[in-house]
Length: 230
Image (cartoon, rainbow, N blue to C red):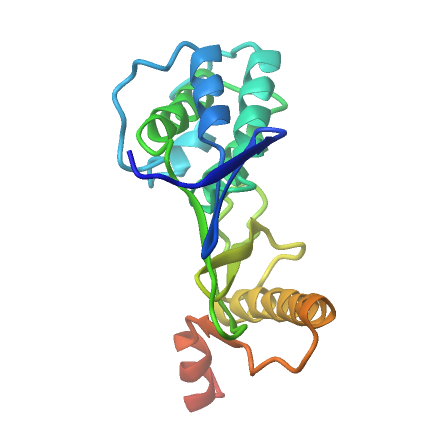
C-alpha cells in the first residue's frame, strides 16, 4: 500500500499529510456505516443511483411502508459522507425528500448507495501544493425535474488548484417557467457562491485573485439571444 504520510482522525474525517499534499477521506467512517447495516460483504456497483428517478416517486409500484426511523438514520449517516463525497451529493438530495413516509423502493435505493460506497471506500479529496491560487467552477440545472412540485434541481462545484473545495445540489426556491429561466437561476446561485469564495480566499491568503471562470451549459441562452421572439 502506498505511504500516505502522517494521518489525523477527527470526527470521522481522515487527514493524510505529506510535505507536498493533503488527502482527505472518510474511509473508516464508510466502513463503519457498511458494518452497521450489514453491507460490508456486498458486491460493489459503479453508480450510486438509478437514472430513472420517476420510479422513486411512483408509489403504485411499491406501497409497502418501511421503518421511517431506520430510513432516516441511514440517510443521515450517508449525508455525513457528502462532506467529502460530491459524487453522492445529487443522490442524497433525491433520497432525503422521502423521509416523511419512506417506501420499500426508497429503502432499496438507499442500500444501492451503500453498495456503491462499498466499492469507493478509498475515494477522497487530494490537495497538492501549487504556485498560484486559481478558482474555477461548474454549474448546471434541469427544468421542472420534480414531478411533485415542478421545481428544477441545480448544482455547482468549485475547484481551487488540484481539487474541489465547494459543491451543492438542491431544488430551486421558485418554479422556473422555461429551461433558460431555470439555468439563469442556477447561474445566479453559482455566481453568488463564487463571490463568497473569492472573498474568503482573499481574506485567507491575501492578494488579488485572477478571474473566476464558471463553466456552464448555456446553449439555451445562446438560442434565446439568436431568436428573442421565441
